[in-house]
Length: 153
Length: 200
Image 1 (cartoon, each protein chain N blue to C red):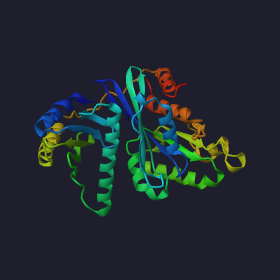
Image 2: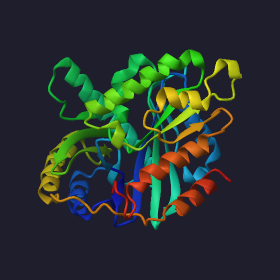
Image 3: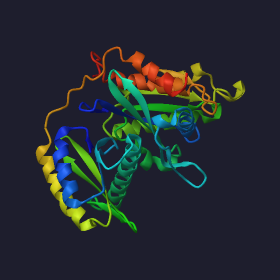
Image 4: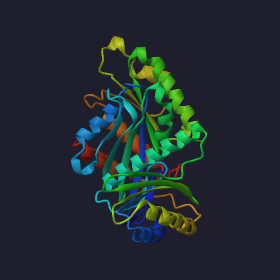
C-alpha cells in the first residue's frame, strides 16, 4: 500500500482486510492519487485514477442536468471481477474511491465497509493545510535536465 | 495545487492542453508519447469518437524524474476542442495546475481561437478560478504552413496573449515547439511550489 498522507493508511488497511477487496485507489476529484493498494506501476495507477475521476465527474454532471440528486455510488459487475466507485467528502477535500473485488468479496461487503471507511477517514482527517514550500528556489536546472533526458536531447 | 507526498517525496501535477478543435492538442501528446522512453511514461489513453476526434479527453502520465529531491510526475490531459463538448471540457479542466492553450495559426481559424479562449476563461470562472492566477502558456501550432495561410507569432500574440505570458511557435506534427511548450508550463507550475516564490 502507498499513501500520500499517513493518516489515510490505517482506515484503508482496515477496509481492505475486512472487505477482502483486491485493488483500492483513493483519489481527489481531479484524479490525483491519494493512496493505492494492489497496483504495481505508479503510472498505471495514474491512468486508473484519471479514468475513475472522469466517470464520477461525468455521472455527477449528468445527474445535475437531469435534476436528480447526486448518485451515491457506481458499480460494474464483470464475470470475474466487480468495480465500485464512489465520491465522498473529508474535511479538506472531496475524494473518490475506486475498488476492484473478485469472488473473495462482494458488492455488499464492499459497500458495507466503504461506509465505515468514510467515517474513519472523516474522523482522522486533519483540518489544517499542508506546508506548501516544497522545491528549492533553483529547481529549474533539475527540471531542464529531466526534460532534456525525457526528450533525448 | 499540485499534489505533494512529503513521505515518499513525490509531486504530481495536472496539465491541461486546451484550444479549438483540430488545433493540435492530441498531436502534442502523441509526439510526447513517441519521444519519451517507455519506462518514463504510462499508457496514453484516448477517449475518442470513431473518427478519432477527442470525445472526453486524452491522458498521458509522464515521469520527469527527480527535481529538488522530489520524484515529479505530470498528468497531461487534452480537452475535446469541438464546441459541442463543452460539458466534458469543463470536467477535464477541474483541478488543473496549469493550462497550455494550443491555438491554430491559420488565419481562417482566428475566430475559433478567440472563442475557445473565451470559453476557457468562462469555464475557469465557473469553477472559481481566475485565469490570471493560473499558470498558462500559449502554443501557436501549424507555424510550418505557408506564410499566406497563417498569422505570425507576433500577430497571434497581439490577438490572443492579453497577459503577455510565454508563447511558443510550433509544428507539433514534426515536434517543433512541443518540448519548449512543455518546459514553459512545467516551470510555471513548479515555480508555485518553490521556496520563496510569491505564489507559493
